Amino acid sequence: MKKYRLNKYLYPALIITLFFLCSCAHYQKNLPQTDIHQNEPYTFDAFNQPRDADETFVILTFSGGGTRAAAFSYGVLEEMKNTQLPGLNKTILDEADIISTVSGGSFTGAYYALFGPRIFTDFKEKFLYRNIQKELALSLMNPANWLRLSSPYFSRIDLAAELYDTTIFEAGTFKSLADRKKRPFLIINATSLYQGSRFEFTGEQFNYIGSDILSYPIARAVAASSAFPFLLSPISLINYPYPDEYKMTDADKMALKDYWNNKSRYYNAFNNTMYADKKGHSYLHLMDGGLADNIGLRAVNDLYLRGGIRKKINSGEIKRLLVIVVNAKNEPQETLDKNESPPGLSTVALKTATVSMDNYSFETVESIKKLFADRIEAQMNLDGCQQKLDEHCKDGYKLPALAGGKMKLYVVDISFDNLPDNDEKNFLKHLPTTFHLEKNEVERLISAGRLLFKGHPEFKAFMDEFK
Amino acid sequence: MEYLLVKFREARGVIIDGISEGMTNEVLELETGTHSVTLEAPPDFTPELHEFLLRKTSVISPKVISFEKV
Image (tube, rainbow over all chains, first blue to last red; front, side, top):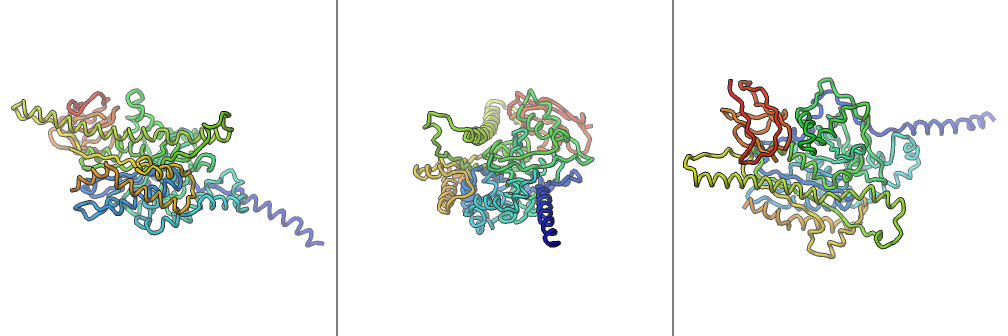
C-alpha cells in the first residue's frame, strides 16, 4: 500500500521535474568581450602574410543553395587544388586569401578553412553524401528533444547546430581558425532579422555587439548562415555592453556624416553602430545569409571599397586580384504560373520569404565588375595622359603615380548558365535546395564546378599572366 | 571611386579614417564621402589633421591636400 502511494506521487513528480529541467534548455550563448583587443586574432589584418605573398590575391565566394551549393563549390576547390601556377611551386588554391560564404556554401568554405586539404579526403562522407535533412528530422522526433524544444530559449536551429558541431566541425570555434594562422580568412555571412542587413562572423562585427568571437562555435555560425526561412528558426546572439575602453572607430564617425554623400557607406556604419543601443537591441536574431546576399559577394565589395583589400591596394601590395564567384542558383520546377487560381497562404508565405534571395545576385556581380573596370580605366587614363604630356611637353613633368600601380583584376563568375551542355544545365538547375541529394547528383555538381572553373575565359586570362 | 593626393615633402605613411593606408605623394583611391587624413609619426607636420568631403575627382584631377613640415 505504502509502495503504491510512493509510486503514485514519485513518477509524476519525476516527470514534472524532468520536464522542468528540460524546458530550461537554453541555446549556447555567445560570451561577452572582456577587453577591446580580444577579437583581434579573428580579423582580416591578423591573417596577414609576408608582403610579397599578396601579389596574387585570390578571393572565393560560395553561394547558398543547400547541398547543391556545397557540392558545386567543392568542385571548384578541387579544380583549384589541381591547378598549378606556371613557374611557381604552388597551386591556385594555395593562393586563396579570403572565402566569403552563405548558407549551403558555408559548409564547404568553413570545412576548408578549418581543416585545409583534409576536405578532399573526408568531406564527401561527412557532409555531401549525407542525408542531413533526415538526421535533423530524426533529431526532432527524439522525445528527449521534445522537452528541450518546449523551452522558449531552445529551438530547431539549436538542434541543427549541435548536429553540425558534433558530426562535421568537431567542436571547432573561431579560435581554432585563428590558431591555424593560415589563410584563407573565412567570412561566414548571415542576415540580421531586425535590419535585414548582412551580419558577418568576424572579429570586427563581434566588436559591435561587445562579444567574444573566438569562443563561438563555427557550427552555430554555419547554422545561422543556413537557417532557411520557415524550415529553421533563427540563431540568437546577445548584444553585450562594451568593454570600458571601447570607442567608435574613426571610419564609422566619418561614414555617419555621409547620409547625403554616400548612402551605402552611411548605412553600413549605421547598421553596425546601432548595436551601441544596448537596451533597444539587447539581442540579435540571425537567419539565412541569402536573405541579404545569396552569393557572399557584398562582404568582398565592402572590403574592396573601404576595408582590408582597399588598404592593401593603396599600400601597393596587390598586383593581381582574382575574385571567383561560385553561384549555385537554381530554377526550381514550379507550376505556379499554370494555374488560374492564386497559390495558397503557405506557398505565398514561403515565396515571399525567399523570393528576394537571388533577385540581386546578378547585380552584385555586375557591381564588382564595374568597380574593377573603373580601376582599369583609371590606370589607362593616367597612362594616356602621361604619354600625351611626354609627347607635347618638354619639361618632363610626371603625373603622380596611382597607388597600387597597374593592377590586373579578374572576376570569374561560375554558374550553371555557363554550362555548354543544355541537358546537364537543365538537370543541375532543377535540383532543389535541400540538405540531401543523391550521390550521383553530388558527383555531377562537383564535375560541373571543376569544368566551369577551368574553362572560364577570365580564369584563362588570369593564368596567361603567369606564362 | 574618388582620388586623393596627400602632399608632403617626403614619403610618409598616410592614415585615413584612423587606418594606415598608402603613402604621401601618390594618388590614393578612396570611397566617396567624408574622410579624415593625417600622417604617421613622427608628429613633425602641420596641420595635425585634414577633414574633408571627397567627391567629383578623377585620377588625373585628384583632390590635393598638403601637410607642411615643422
